[in-house]
Length: 541
Image 1 (tube, one colour):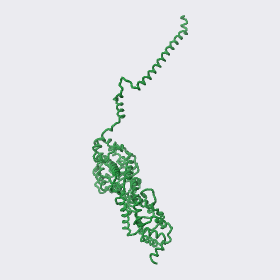
Image 2 (image 1 turned 135 degrees about the vertical axis):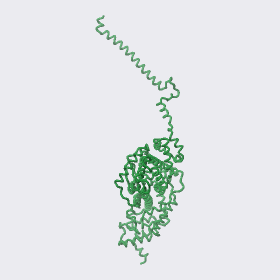
Image 3 (image 1 turned 90 degrees about the horizontal axis):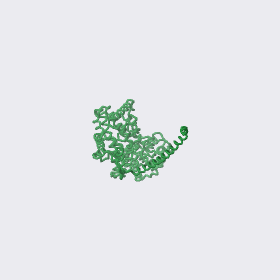
Image 4 (image 1 turned 60 degrees about the vertical axis):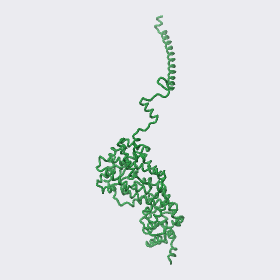
C-alpha cells in the first residue's frame, strides 16, 4: 500500500490536522499515538487530550486557557501562568522577614512626618515573594495595559486574517477542528472570528506575562513603575529582591531596605492624600490609548516574525500561519511581538497626551525622590548614594521602560524626573513645606512640562496669592471696616432700604402714640370714678 493510499485511509481528524498543521506534524502526531499503544483509528469523538508532536511543555489545560473565549483584550489567566513560569524557585517569606518589612514601613511613616505635610494612610503592610507580587498586581496591570492592547489586538487580528487569506486557508474549514480528538474539547469549534481574537489575546498575554515575570524578579515594592500596582491601602516590599540588589553594594541590606521602605511609604502617602491622582492617571492613559496609531506594516512584520521564529524552532512545516501546534509553547509566541508596532508619526493630540502622562509620572517620581531623601537624610549614612543608584537604575534598566515602551509605546524621560525633583526642592527652600505640598491640592495647580524645563514662571506664580474676585474683595473690606459707601449714597442720605425701614418704624411709633393717648384718657376717667365711689369721698361731702 502506497503512503498516499495509507493516508487516504486515515481518520477524518488526521486529514483536518494535516491541512491545518502540515503533513509532517500530522504524521508525527499519528505515530506518537501508535507508539503509546493507542489506536488512532478509534479516537474520533473521544475526549482524550491530543498528544502534541515533539512533546509540548505546554499542556492541554494551559492550551485551553490560551484559546478560551473571553471579552478582555488580554487572556489574563495565560498571562499569570506565563509570568509564574518565568520565576525561579523562591522560598516563602518567613515570619521574621514579614515582621521586618512591617517595622521598616512603620519607621518610614515616622520619618516622612518630618518631610511632608501630607498625611499617612492606615495601610496594610505586607511582604511579598515574586509570585505573590504577581498575584497582587494583576488588577493594576489590567487597568494599565488593556486600553492600549485592545487597539493593538484589533490591528493584530486583522493582520493574521490577511495571513490566512494569503496562504489560501479558508477560515470556515477551521470549524471542523471539533473532529480532532482532544482539540475539539480544548479549543472548541474554532469560530474564525473568535479564534483570531482569542489568539491575539493569548499572544499579548504572553508578552505581558513575560514582562510581569521579569519585573517580579527585580521589583522592590508596589510602586517601581511610578503607578501604584497594589490595591489601595496596601504597602508592600519584596525582601528577596532587595537582598539581591544590596549584595553588590557597599551598603548594608538594612539601610537599603529602609530607604526603599521610605520610598514605598511616600508613594502611598501621596496617592492617599491626593485622591484625584489615580483618576487623572487613568484618564491620561485612556486618552493616550485612544490616540495611538498602529503601523499596519509593523503588525504584518510582527506576524511574519512570529511565524519565522516558530519555524526555526520546529523545522520547516506548512500550516496554520506557520504556527505548528506540535511543540506548542506560548513563551515563544511573545518573541514575535518585540518589534515596534506603533506608528512613528504622532498626531498633535497623541503627542500632547504623551507629554501630559510623562509629566505627571515625572512629578510623582520627583516628589517621592525629594521627600524620601530629605526624610532619610538625618537617619541614613548613604542616602545620597542610594538616591543616585536608583536614578541610574531608572535611566538604564528601568522596569517601567521594560513594560510600557514595548506594550503601549510610552517612553519615559528620566530627565523630567530629575527636573521635577529639583523643582520640588526649590519650592521647599523658597516657599516652605506646606506651600510645596499645597501644589497637589488641585490638578490645575501642578506644574506642566514647560514648567519643568523653565521653572521661573511657575515659581513666581506659586508664591503669589490667587487673585480674588470682587465679592471676595468686598467681603474682606466689610470685615475690616473699610468697605465704602455704595454709589450715590453718603452718610447724610438714607438708602431706599433705610427709608423704607424708617417709614415703617414711624408708622409703628404713631400707632403706639395714639394708643398711649387713648390709654391715658381711659386711665383718667377710671381714676375719677374711683374717687366718687370711695367712702372718704362720701364723708367729705
